[in-house]
Image (cartoon, rainbow, N blue to C red; front, side):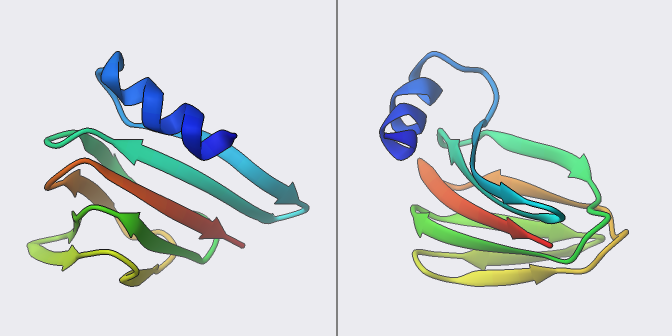
Length: 98
């Protein structure tokens, strides 16, 4: 249900669409949907995190380093490091934090 909703929302949204899937204490899992060209602006995490691409292709950008992630690729995100995500095509990814 959550993924279906995310897949429908970006059609009418100017920003990535995020939906919480599960939260328990400091642990959280969410799904984020992008249309091609959308960016999750620069931000940092205060807890260890992992991004995993479910469908599509995104670029993880940290400082001047751009890492391309395709379907089922993942990237561990260090705490307190500024980073951003750019969708190279319509994409869905999972964020696990904590």
